[in-house]
Length: 161
Image 1: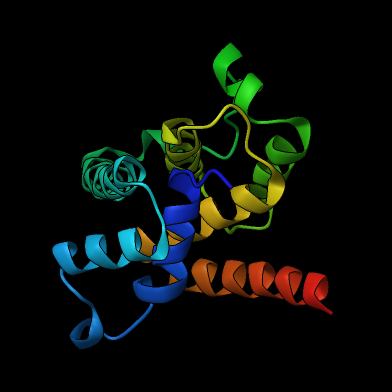
Image 2: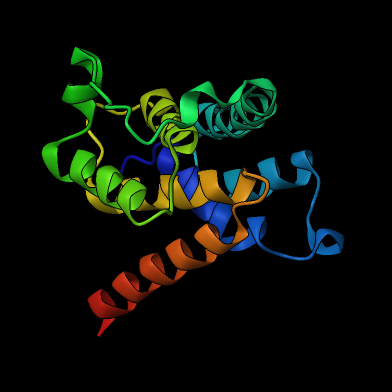
């Protein structure tokens, strides 16, 4: 089975992102563990770059003005985005915006992070995980993160049962 960047991100998120800081290993220890689990070295580095880039986006978005938060704005997708995000994913992003889980700025971070993944297409389950990861890193979005976390894990339990 070919492991990709998304698989590495999912492993990291499920095992380390939401844990106590005192229990988190350093980057070198994580790399060693990930390689031991079977993830390719290149994919591990791409995943770390992906996470580090999200932090930069977060910092930059905090410095922008309120201009991107208009409720009347309409999002048009580029040709590349349309190829990567099917109708179901785009509809889900719109739904999350309408119920207040995402705002325009956070939606853009989600789209940018999806486009940064090394994959041709992303399915709805992967999209949900990317949204969850992005919300985790966004300050002041704790309620949206909790709501999204419940949604992701409820879907996961429904598949298991």
